[in-house]
Image (cartoon, helix red, strand yellow):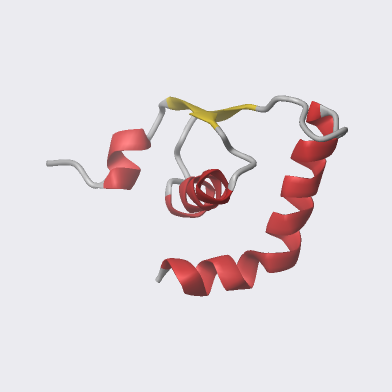
Length: 75
């Protein structure tokens, strides 16, 4: 049986709900532990007066600011 990084190597992954709590955890985990993943596609919808672009931007800022916390939570 292949490990998770081996399974996702060279594959593209579509993630819905990437701006929610579990979606953010999944995106961070895949980016950190699967370096050979071909692409991550995230499906984002506008919500609560925020555009799709703003929600993705906010999510990326969160990853930059809290990457150490995500690292400790995932171990």
